[in-house]
Amino acid sequence: MKQYFIIGGSAGIGQAVVKQLSQANHSVITTYNHSEVEELENVTYHQYDVLDKDKSLPEVPEVLDGVVYCPGRIQLKPFHRLSAEDFTQDYELQVLGAIEAIQHALPSLKKAENPSIVLFSTVAVQTGFMFHSTVAASKGAIEGLTRALAAEFAPKIRVNAIAPSITQTNLSQRLLNSEEKIQSNAARHPLNKIGHPSDIASLATFLLSDQSSWMTGQIIHLDGGLSTLK
Image (cartoon, rainbow, N blue to C red):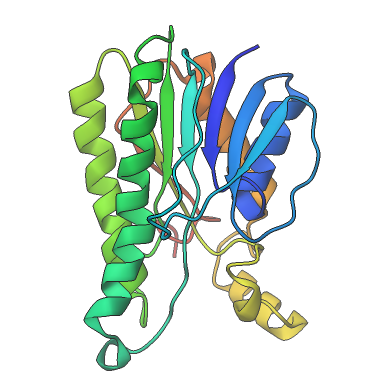
């Protein structure tokens, strides 16, 4: 049994990661904000809001095998309608939150045999999309952070990021709230379908596992072929 720390594990991709780790009999400490939690074996939940400076991250075990940072936001607006505060809030949630979580867990990660950190980017960083400037800017920082930390932490701690396309989660609900929208978004992808949280979680759990022990500093596109196939 290994021990993992998942920030944002009560919904969407984070919830799918927690479920897969629980089913594999690993111990998980995870945070939730507003979502209801699902009782799972070997899973401990702690309420935590990344943007609430009055709340602290939960204590982690002395030895920690992996960290996954899942919180995110999709704010699609024309650039001229965005404020500096919009960009700042995205950066605080998606970048500074990840930095705080990693620094919090780092002493415990250093004591594990083959520790791994998994972060999340987006296909929109390396494939430009209209109205994606806030998310592309913050997730672009995540990609830079991934490579910098992978270099700094090698050979002890591996750091990788997953860059998905649109996935059927609460975050994307308003973009996929009708069959017409689902079919339209699916048609943009060479595989002609929308991603499912379990698709992304399966890659995340692989990156946490010893099976990926020779992989670090990678930004892995899991996007139905959208970023590379035309």
